[in-house]
Length: 263
Length: 364
Image (tube, rainbow over all chains, first blue to last red; front, side):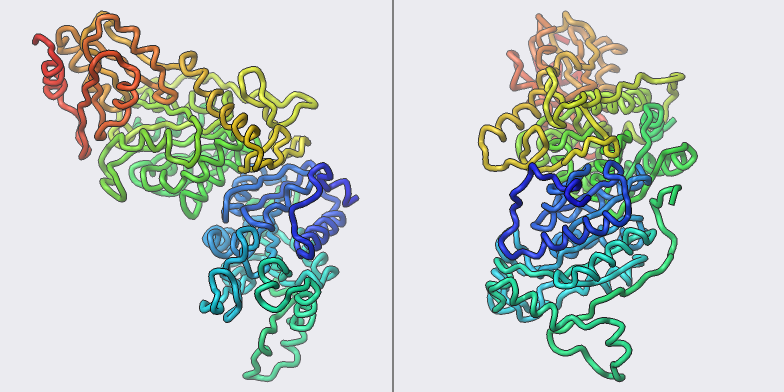
């Protein structure tokens, strides 16, 4: 079924060897296969960046929009026709820098769309500049001496702004990621699935993760399951250095906008 | 009825079912009226977005679902919309923008009228393109031209602009609202046709999202399938030249204007609020040897109309800016072009325009 959703005449794709984006697209299409959604009633949107090329490889109606604005375009699509299933692909720069305002307002409105953020901590398309999620001290072409700004935590941001469903996984955790995307599809309101992923070309090369597997190994060994952390942590404990939480961060039913009458 | 309300009512009469906007003086009444009216119309949606960038983005999204979509703004918001206006041009998205112009630059004069965005509407986004811009000079025209803007947007698959100003937007006049207005939707995408393959008029057929055509829409230079092809010079040139010519080639056919006294020697070329003073000077005071050309569609500029005045000795262009459309008139006129500028928010006085005729050589 997944192959029917691929725009095969657009292949080969533009992604670099070892890029994590293909894995994530695969997981999203796998989740869609489990929804039974009608291909003609599903719309993918994106902004600008590597992540945002994804809709171009998927055989549905799709809107590849301006930098950072995909969620605002998606709001228009969903509000004008709530019966459509609306999915946004975005990246860390697209979502959290230039698109930050649209991001938090869509969370606040709880507009019934699903946003999948490919967070590779870098502007890959433009050659490796620092982004709002580049970790402190990490190197990019615009942070040649190490990033001096604190990064955003996209999941916490979405929760604070009001989103109904927020999860974080990595390009290593394909099974859990697929399940999270599926849950996002099924949860009315705004769903964010943040996916930490490797960019060997622009991020890994400058940060000692030159081979794709280097960063996959890092993701695997530094991802701490949120439930496990909360179960075992002692008061005052802090996450080990370079570690981060994964799992489902919130699932709730605040009032939503743009939900289909049929739902 | 107020001009801004008339504009909103014109949109609703034309079947506008999606409005996204952000408050800004002096256009806010358009959004407020839509906010009150649209929730009571089945299948319609009003949404207040977080800024004008988002408003423009949302109406493009709405338009791709097949909804007639509109936003309204003024100078500062208009500036913010520029990138997505270019996106609408490149993706051939039909939509309508109302710009109630105010004094600029920057925050300028929020409550005073101006015509300072006439070049921005034509050239404000990056790259080469053309658009359609209409200018009302009274409240009836706010209604009529807003409704008309939707038909032009659908026919040419392009953003269309109602370039009103604070004077007209906040003016109250009696108007006649017709029982129904003409509605011409975009021609549909023929079966088997590529989504960006133009018809004989240079305009592709339209397939709304959800109708099974699986259209990929991108702001990148694209082929007729809609797929990116960004390094092929011929591809880019063919696409951009078509986007321009589909509008420019129709400029005389779609021209919307009034000509008064073709035999005149001193002709006012006017649009928007200054039309009112011109009519006072030409029609009521009957200043000798004067006539006028009122443009309701300013862009694309219908330069052939200037030839309709065989005795012309000068074209006089009264504008609420320091000279914008006067430059376009100058480009095409074979006689002197005299600019009469007014900025600050007040209209030209009749005396001022009569004096301009005198200075042009008029024997008054």
